[in-house]
Image (cartoon, rainbow, N blue to C red; front, side):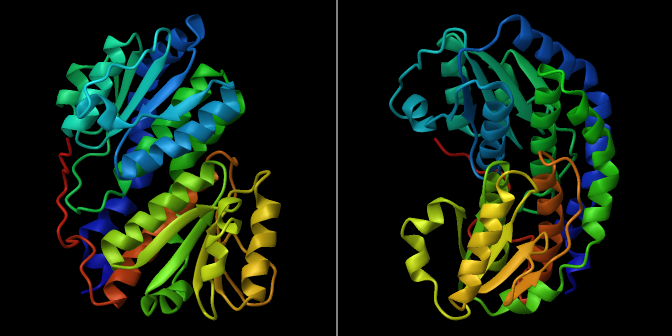
Length: 343
């Protein structure tokens, strides 16, 4: 099997076309949602999601809080689904993110948020899903069918849906312009050669993935995909949090993957990468870091808010290649299904 023959590879390669379609077809819906947010500024934002959608929610949290200052927090879904509690959210917004829109706990949390006074916006790929029935407004991800269990293009579509919503909400013309350029940049990111990292990862048993700010959600997604598709024990940390204990596990040749957007987090990530390399870790970094012992990977330069999206696109190609190099089929992780219905 070649990575190019897998659904994961083919579907991730579609991300540029997906985002172009999404930005075009959602323009009026996003404008309506943004107008509502400007007319009735939310007191808080609650985010609901599982798996890759939860990772998209981490990106959303950083973006919303950094751009608007509105307190944003992940929802503990079990509070609604298992413990039957309705959150007190008058004047709030609930952002529910899902590929399928069918997980009972997610639907229960969104329904409870609405009952508690929140305006509920769903970002969902499967239109006509149960999630859409309990929300006030649905923004379709428009990623199309995903046959691979590992979500790729729908995750990227979740991130761009959040970015488009925030750009319109804040009337941020620079971010709007950057979004228009994003589909072509995703094509460029897909073509980047990250194959030197395959040899560094194919024999690994554990590794860290490090990011910060909006890049932390991307680090979490990369770690999840390494677990799912490569059967690698991967843990994601923020560049700040990894210093509080986890660094003690680093030993000679322990792999550490840095995914860093070029913003205020860059200098700290670069310094941390150098510290890991000095301790003998096998450091892999995108974008490139000038330091001995660091395997540098190319990265597309863009709007700092959107660079994490470009990084995860390049990573998806790498993940498919590492899985195949380890003798695995990335489309069919053991014990997993495409739609996970938790309660």
